[in-house]
Image (cartoon, rainbow, N blue to C red):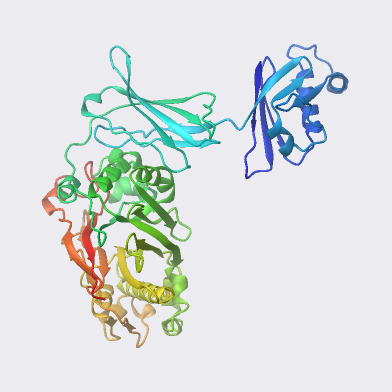
Length: 553
């Protein structure tokens, strides 16, 4: 008996029917709220238009087809063998159908079979680096991943690993090739299953060669200090990392002008994301803040892979941009209380200082045209119900001679978070500010964070020239924070620019620093001219520390 495969997407008003006419496959898409009798008429017309039929004029052919279709029977049978009323709507009739009868042909109706829509492996697969399949399926509750290695000489296939993983649209199964697989071919076979553990029609198969890795990577030195997870309920490890968005790394200007020292393949996101995921995994962090995180890469790669490692995450793009900020957290350490993001420029309009800034249209326009966002994820450490850990993640404006812009962005961030914290007045609130602030240790923004003010006489207000100078502007904040990761010699290292731009700020009365990640040396960074390189996936380095929640608040 032939099969008619019927797809009824839950969120679309369509019914899709695939069936075999004998000489070709036929695809039909109809509305759910159409009567099934009309759909059956279309199916009968398909059968009357037989291949090899003597050609006639269009009108004559159509008339003959209609006559033939009227003489042919077509109906649906349910699980009891009873005929389904032709006046039933498609959205109701097809889910009940077990057989489709058209003339003397009978089709077994397969409704919403588990199906793999797409399956892809990265272009780069290297020994020692995680391979994360990009898979999309529908009507599936689990996926079986079978990894094979194919010998280069004999073409013999050896099953290396087989896993059945629940499918939720995010999580996937990663595989780490061993050194002995170099020169061989990695093969992945994926099979879908639904809630009844019914197997999908055809498994999907993809293959890719396994290449040698780049050798020792600088982040592996840091992994020596982060090899074990933290287990104390009041202690956690946090990482902040600008991962260099593919939106920027893949441009001709980057390849030919900004970073010509980096081989093109090492700028390719399929290569870099392998290094990034291996780097992140080795930190064994509880919270990871990413900047310049491409949404599509987060959705298709970072989120699925990290979910398999015990993380959940959120990504929020900058305004009208493909990249933005992302926060990942361990689901066995934290419960999510709230998540939101806001455009810094929009938050400025609600502050008193905006009335001053409006008097300088050039400064106002420059501030309002910035697309930077503040990303906030509020977490409750498990076993500590009264704590609200507010993780703020951001990436400030990057242009030189714009320290005044970044100081005001920082002020907006502090004031917005201060107001946001009021909603948790009944809890013990702790705040961490993470990100690429594009600010040297001696700039006004750092002064605002650490001393609580930037006076009107500060030279920063003249940095934008006369057109952006605003008379008597000053910034004040009630709190004084410290950089828990200190002030390393650099966190950004490219040809012609070496500076510390990335920080993790918090209040010393709330947190005790237990450990700070060691920083990369200049010699290591310069081994391949600058960052990024074949062994370092970003122009920034990751910063991180182990923090303990103080209980004297």
